[in-house]
Amino acid sequence: MNMQRTTKVKWGSLKIGIVISMAIAVMFWASLSGGGTSIFESKKKFVCYFQNVNGLVPGSPVWMSGVEVGNVKSVKFVSISPEKQVELVCRVKNEVWDRMTADARVQLGTIGFLGDKYVEVIPGVHGGEPIANMDEVPTKDAGTAVAVFVEAKNSFSDIRSTINNVDSILARMNRGEGTLGKVVTDEAMYNNMTSLLAEMTKLTANLQKNQIRIVESLEKTSDAVGAITAKVDNNTGTIGRLVNDPKLYDNLESSTASLDSILHKMNVAEGNLGMLVNDTALYSEMTDLMARMNSLIADIQADPRKYFKFSVF
Image (cartoon, rainbow, N blue to C red):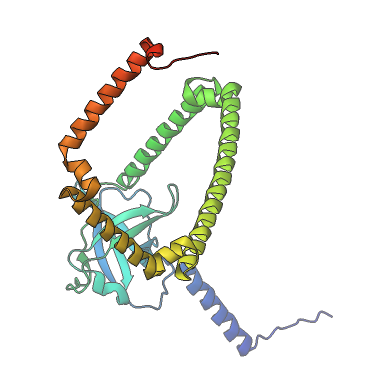
């Protein structure tokens, strides 16, 4: 006897399965819609045109000032003009729509040189009049996204050229060519530089020692000057007496007055010194006396017997 089983599904379990399936479907749709923006956020749309989008697909993110603010809703061919071959409809959050003014621009970008493509919005002047929904936003580069990488390629070319030049310089240095090559490969220059550094070290040490000696000498001189100043202030020693004792000044003043009086008398021919200084007759007589004495001494030397007589017995 065969028994058939019937399986009954409860309504509660069915509701849980439906909710889970809907959640999975919503998450899947959100992932296909792209971006980190919520599907429940209200958005506005704008249109832009490119000649070539180079792999940009619906759901690609839309960035503004480095922040993801929306995504690409659709990509389709329109062939309006040579520069407007592909139409993009992009959605951005309402909270940034005030920056979508008439002077706003869009351009294509990439995350890395081989990464995902995105649309970058260059916002307009803050405070301007926002554009209407589905208005066209001009493109900064209406040609092709390849133009985005032209500058980067040029930069790589410059970097490659610089690297080649550096490699050439390093190769010449390794061969010992040029000044840098000599510095790297010639041991004589290294030895000379080492010797020079050693001599500079010695010279610096000697200069430091001399500086210490000079400082010590200046300190001793300063101490000596301080001691002399203290003695002068304390009326000690000759200099102290000279500076502080008024008697010495009085004596010098008195001596100066006496000397002045004597010189005055000499000038007016008073006294013996005055006569000696001012009277020319005394000078003449002294000159005549000296002449006669010279004559007498010469005569005595010529005939001493005339003036001196000698007798033994």
